[in-house]
Every structure is written in structure tokens, then in C-alpha cells.
Length: 331
Ligand SMILES: Cc1cc2nc3c(=O)[nH]c(=O)nc-3n(C[C@H](O)[C@H](O)[C@H](O)COP(=O)(O)OP(=O)(O)OC[C@H]3O[C@@H](n4cnc5c(N)ncnc54)[C@H](O)[C@@H]3O)c2cc1C
Image 1 (tube, rainbow, N blue to C red):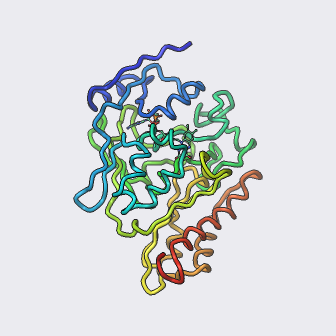
Image 2 (image 1 turned 180 degrees about the horizontal axis):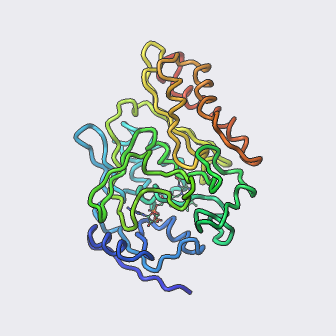
């Protein structure tokens, strides 16, 4: 049996000081990742600092028309927020497509961003896994890899990033605000998630003890017409095989602005810059959608198990774009 010290932080400074000072400590929010992995011996903290008493729960309007979502706001609260539903339906849809109602009531937004990969070799605590134990090897490359990534992979790791809402946040250029020993920092969402490269154990740029305080959604009128499409093995309580978060605006049947990000296919929430480049200024037509999808997946590196994702991802992109356009008009 391992002893774990549990304490409740009175304020953010105390939480940061406690975790920063002890490399064997972790923050505890909803616990739906932390406790899960602790039970499986994948995470082995000796001290848990409960941050649920900190005042980081609000969903507030920002002066620029955007929203600031507290790191401890629960997934279900954010999904139900009228402000989120009206301004960024893609965020509400991505949240509601994730986990189960019970989990969404527990799980926080900050914890969601820091959830761990669902690769079975990472989570079994014994197989070689460069992410869990640097230098030990990657069991998925030659192993069972049906759910794994085809974009942003390296020889060291091919695990897909599991979060749904992070895909929507990637499409909307969200920013992640933190507080830590270096003071207040803000990360663009694309810089927040790291591809594995040679250091798959480094999933984000945070220092140990750096606390996520909020997620900022910048003002984005395009977000009001947006959709999250998730394809998975069963209709609920399942991670994405492929997903797409998409927002789009049209002028006279031509794509004037577009945001597209993919989930389930990449080692981080994947902003589809190539596809966006093809789509901007193109007619809102299936042919443009298909070409954009083909371009985005052209660098896919597959295994025998997950090769189907290349075709599936292209279909999901086309379907998401079609969902937002009807006869050359935004739907
Ligand atoms: C069965 C199951 C199914 C799921 N299905 C989905 C799904 O379909 N889609 C999806 O997106 N997710 C899914 N999830 C993941 C779930 O959304 C995450 O577990 C949850 O969002 C994590 O939030 P939490 O508050 O419980 O975090 P915790 O478990 O408390 O923390 C997770 C990690 O983040 C750290 N942390 C937490 N808050 C902060 C903070 N403010 N600052 C810095 N570090 C912090 C913790 O130290 C820990 O390392 C599923 C989970 C389970 C168990």
C-alpha cells in the first residue's frame, strides 16, 4: 500500500507553493483522471493538493466579447451555459459528446486539458511506454493501434490526444491562463499541447506546480455557426476515432472564413491549417471540401490497424463542412 497525503488548498498561492515544492505531488480537481490512474499505478503521487475550494469556477464575459471560463468550471456547467451555447456551440457540443453525464458533473475544464492518453500500453503501467517511462520504448508501434494517431506522431509515441473540448478550443484559438512560480502566463492553445517528438513524456509546457486558472475564448462571431462532429465505436461514453470542430462563414457562396480542427487522429488537438488554406476563398462545394480534407491528411502515417482513419477523417471533414452549408449558404 502507498500512503498519500491529502490536503485542501486555502488559496491559489498555497496550492502552487505546495505542489511546486514537492515533485511527488499533484493537484486534484474532479479526480476523474488523477484517481483513475493512481489506482492503476500509472500516476504515483505521494501528495494530492485538492484545489476544488479555489474560486476558479466562473464563466464570465470578457471586455472584447469573448468568454473567460474558470479552470474549475465543470464540463456540464460549461456545456449548459447559455453564453457558451449561443456564442460557441462547438464547445457545448464537444463537451456533451465527451464521457458520461456523471463524469461531466465531476470533471473540470482544467483537468480536461491535462487528461492523459487512452493508449492501453500507457495505462497498463507495465508495458514499455516512452510517455510513462522515457526511453522504455513504444509498445503501440508494433502492437494494437486501432485508436492511435496518424498525424503528429513520432517513432517514440503514436498515442492520440483524447480530449474532445480541446479540439473545439483549438478551432477557436483559445488561450490557457496559468499562475505559477513564473507569475501569470497565457499560452495559445496550439502551443499548449506538444507533439511527442523525442520527448513524449512532455505533454504541455507547464512547470510542475503551475496552476491553470482559466480558459479564454476570444471574441469570434464565426463561432456562432459552428459544429462538433464525433465518430466513435458507440454512440456515447466513448472516445473519438475521428472528430472535427468546424466554424465557417460564407459570402455569396464563397468561404470567407473557416476554422477547422481534428480530434482522434493526432497526437494533439490538430488545427487543420492546410485544409483551411484550401477552403478560404473557395466555393462552398463538396469538391472544395474533399480537396481540403485530402490535403490535410496527405501526411498521415498509419499502422495496419489505424489506416482506416485517413479515409474516415476525410469523410468527417466533408460532413462537418456540409453540415454548416446548405446550397452555398451557412446553415
Ligand atoms: C470513463 C471515462 C470516459 C471519458 N470520456 C471522455 C471523452 O469522451 N472525451 C473527453 O474529452 N474526455 C473524456 N474523459 C476524460 C475526462 O474528461 C477527464 O478525466 C476530466 O476532464 C479530467 O478533469 P478532472 O477535473 O477530473 O481532472 P483531475 O483528474 O482532477 O486532474 C487531471 C490532471 O490535471 C491536473 N489538474 C487538474 N486541474 C488542474 C489545474 N487547474 N491546473 C493544473 N493542473 C490541473 C491534475 O493534477 C491531473 O494531473 C473520460 C474519462 C473517463 C474516466
